[in-house]
Image 1 (cartoon, rainbow, N blue to C red):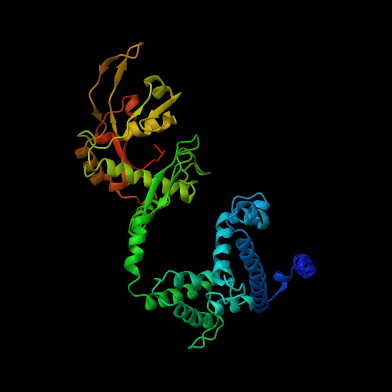
Image 2 (cartoon, one colour; image 1 turned 135 degrees about the vertical axis):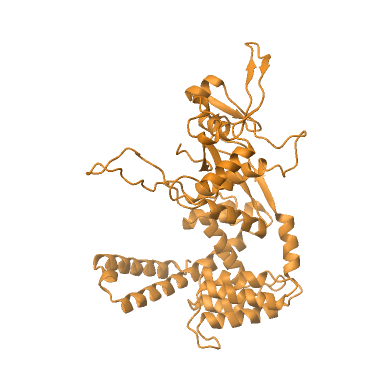
Length: 424
């Protein structure tokens, strides 16, 4: 007998009616600010109560999927690989939300005695009570329990539970200072403070764990690109974020430099940068790798600096057809990439016979040497694109008149541009 089918159906019908009525009557638009604030508060509390039902249900799904025999697991009965996949199917959430639901359920789910089978208290009883009262939802549960669960095993479970009691009081608005109920972010900060107080020596073990888990992995090349995943140490992530911040200044490009207004005067440039933040960060990382490779500070390979070798047929490079090939990458790259690398790197011409035999090897021709780069950087200060604040050290020196079209490698023909810019 399904004990919840009828109550849930009734609740769903009532909530659906409220949603439709609020939309039809424009209840939010017609409310005063005080009324709207009260409505948002009540709706959020209702959402937390519904989350409490969902968290308990997720906990039971996880329990029924923990058996050793695969055929007896609930996930197997529904044709799913694991609990996350089953939750995504049943609730229509993404993997991250499914994982958060599982973590919240594990934190507040009552344990079952292995000997008697009776229901025991959860690890954080006060957090569970707050969940059932609609005080905290998934965000609040994880904000309180996650920092406390990071304490070392030497910290007694009772001490963690007592610390959670204090933070839960703040969630209920019953803190010592009479402050209003704390949001999830404040609860997380308070729980972290308690975690450090309970386990002052816990930082060093956690650092060792992070060092063991640090990783960067390049996946197999695909037609769409090369997958990149890993886990950075905090200081490495902070350094990378600093590099990103230096590159995320707005870029100005000239859509039509010859456009005129009604009086015949040139129109000002319009700021256009349709890259997403993730794409900008990719380009910043690519620029940082380029700078590092050319710095002369990295270990050498075969006595030479680590150099990306890109080969392309000369006709394809001039005409913009065909593909180029990067050493160490199975996927071909466009000739646009080859042009970009050739403009800022070292060019060496190799002539091959029809039978593939090397007929002639040219000498390396550096587009702009370090003396020219320094002079151009001193002259221009940074990227010459209006509105771009990228310093010269993070720019690439480009030919005004392209080298392939006879442009000289001279300071008069060189300008600093933001890495991977296509505004030449």
